[in-house]
Image (cartoon, rainbow, N blue to C red; front, side):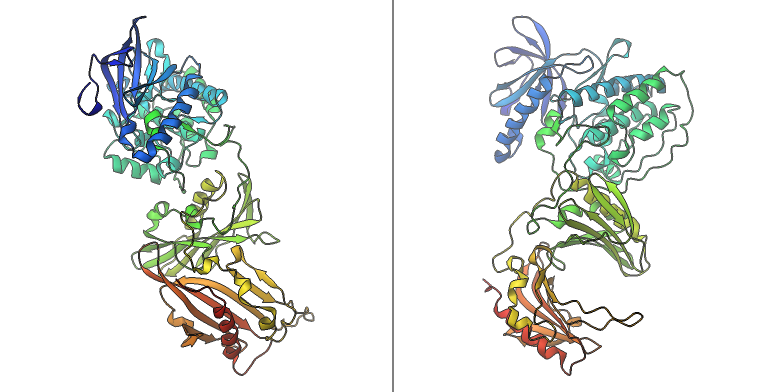
Amino acid sequence: MGAEGTVERGDLIVGRYRLDAEIGSGGMGEVWRAVEQGPNTTVALKQVRLSRLAPDERQRARDRLRVEAGIASSLDHPHLVPVHRLVEHEGEPWLVMEYVPAPNLDELTAAGPLPPNRVARIGAQVAEALEYAYSAAPGVVHRALTPRNLLIGEGDRVTLTGFGISPIGTGANGAGPNGSGVAAYLAPEVANGLAGGPQADVFSLGATLYAAVEGRPPWGDGDPAQVRAAAMKGIVDPPRHAGRLGPVLMRMLQSRPRERPTAAAAARMLAEVARSEPTTGRAGSTGRRRWPWVAAAAVVAVVVAAAGLVVWPGPASELIGAAPAPTLGDPATADPCSLLIPEPLDRFGETTLEADSGNYDRCDVVIDSGQDRFTAQVQLDQAGAQLPAGVPEEHDGLVIVRGAPGTGECVRTLRLSDGHDVRVFARLVRGAPPDLCAIADVVTETALTVLVRGPVPRREAPFEPGSLAVVDACGLLDPATVATVPGLETAEPDPSFAGWGCDWELPAPPPPPGAVPPPAASIEVTYDRNRGISRNAGNPMKVAGRDAASRPDEDGVGCDVTVRHRAYTDQRGYPSDELLIVKVDHASRVTNPCARSVAIATVAVERLPAVP
């Protein structure tokens, strides 16, 4: 054995496999050709260096690797490398697999691109292997398909490696010779942090075939950071030399996973191209595709990069895969920021995530573009009795309503199956308005890719003791206090999302035809987060000893009172404040509308929890 646990030619692994030659390397270990003692059989061994992981990650990675290796060993297909077993040597796992003495596609194309029909014939075999794997072991996904995973034998017989073995992978951020790093072939959703499903494999296969016929992968073959950035943006230039293969590749490289063909459909299309006469020239009118969405929230385990295998939550289908209808889960712990990722919005300007703006049910991204500023916002809400105005569409078990563009605003609504909405807003703050609906659509697609995986991800940490977020807003006012506003003597509390707001209002009788509806009395208690009390909040004052401000409405029927509850440090490290807002409207003009508002706000403040 070499220094620090490294291995050398001639070492004996688990007393059974004599290392002969290193044939590949990756971020998590090396791949060796070895000879099994006794039967004198040549095998391939992949070392998985769990020692490179943090101590608390090693056991989880080890357990997952056992499961995935077991799944991989159950696969039996003529175009898949057989996995024999998982062994452990000096604390590190090794995957034992059949040795295939054949060049990989990366080596085969080193002298130049291949003819389109030959590339199609290679691709059809790989797509068949993928379809078999998805059917034989539901939940399995390759996740790291590149030219170096395709071994091309005599007569262009293809053997796909990587289901639990990935013998020559370089890791998600690496780049090997000829631009064969995994990043150069990633589907956009994977490049942006989502765990890829079967349709991501279809994309990676399309990217691999694109490279074989064009001489470069779709995301380029330069600096790994630039390659990954291109993958995140998701703009694919149509192939120039693919001939009849071009339209098939562009189908496989569609920006939205649900618009790509399944592996089975891709196999049929590729086989048809392979049977055609050799062609040259530019591809047909495929167009330039822009990927307008990305995501969030799923982090791929490090062992995935090592083993090239992930478990996808649900069986593969003709589209993405059957999954339960999207739900919100517990409203108080659902994280709206998990549905709003800044990076996809970078093409509109410089982005800043604001996780502590407004009530706890929302998350914002501020976008600055020169003198222009706009915001993207995700807000969680209770679903109304009717769909909002707009054009409804059904997607992955939910309904998306795309509202018509308004003045300085564009709104999208995603209605979930458990009586909740995800509201998406794009708003102009200052300057020349961009295409706000394009921004809203990027956020909508990002949220959709997260929602189809299951309930909205939870917040990373519970709310701090004394936070308004743990206070039921309806419990801050008793019936007697509400009844001090004429017209609300019998009003019942109407809680808003997660109890972070409450309304008291009685519906007014309908006015005569053509008459203007009279104002209705109401009380509204809401929460807010801001860096201090805004100057727009009104006249500074004290309410129950706390900093506050009051602002009467111009029509003389209402007044808003803002009270500073407590100071805290927001997620960006800036000082911020939690604010209580009490809004009181009367059914008619009153001499001093703020007097009643301040009195009611005082009752609410006295019922707030003590600040630690």
